Amino acid sequence: MTQPRVEIGSQPEVRVRAPGKVNLGLRVGAREPDGYHPLVTVFQAVSVYEDVVATPGDGLTLSVSGPQAHLVPTDETNLALRAARALAEFAGIDDGVHLHIEKSVPVAGGMAGGSADAAAALLACDAFWGAGLSRDQLHELAAGLGSDVPFGLVGHTAIGSGRGDVLTPALSRGEYHWVFAVRDVGLSTARVYAEFDALAGAGSGAFGPDSDLELLQALRAGDATALGRALRNDLQPAALELAPELAETLAAADDVGALGVLVSGSGPTVAALARSRAHAQVIGAALTAAGVADTVLTAVGPVPGARVIASPSP
Image (cartoon, rainbow, N blue to C red; front, side):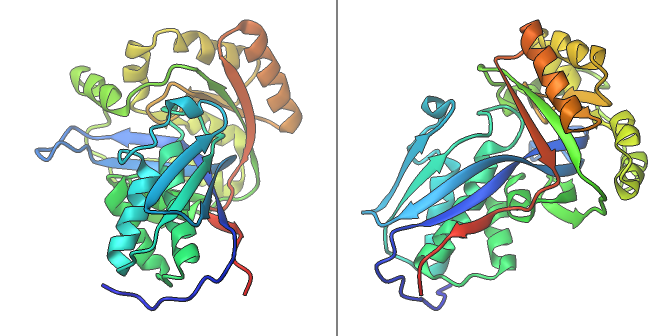
């Protein structure tokens, strides 16, 4: 399908920023015959960002900078490059582009950094090439790249179902303060799901749109204390089996008064909900002092999804 082209002139770059995420609730069903697990999850986008910068290039190429950049592949397995290729094929574009990723979201940390890169790459390439794709078309491409990529486009707070890619906006009031305890060594999402399958009865079994009613009510009320009590992650037991040291991180955050604490997504990042920005700093200092994290980040949520922050001059 060929879209109308818009000439980009002599502009140097298009920069797009996309957020990482935390799963406030993640309920996982038994693996289905196609190998996938049905999910009901509540995503919140947080202010830990990936920037993707599109500049002129020969072919489709990629470079990476920032924390853990050496862990990010720059070949065709990279999700941002796959996003650029998918958009080019969809829109019938033959031009090249160089993508540079400026990382902040932990690698293999359960915060969807790779998915944020893919969402940002879709938006950056669409603007850079003047492809003019609609939001629905971008969402369709995102869903074909990975379950978390559509949320990278949307951001804010949303309920994900199916494989996590079918999104419904969730009503949320107020601002929530988070502390993320990051490990240098990530966890493979595939390994965590395999361990989940091996732990009999680890999942939620049957679930539906009302699975996280208490959590959604807390978000609507803007009640951080109630939200902390309602946090849930069905993958947490599997992550703890693979990385038992995470129990110390969870306990350290709990000991310093976190409203709620859980493994983020497939881990190993641990997310702690704080009462305020100042309380988040206290939790972060305690985690650092306890030596239960390699890096500690603080953030707020919800924040918007991928957005252009530098674009071509007319």
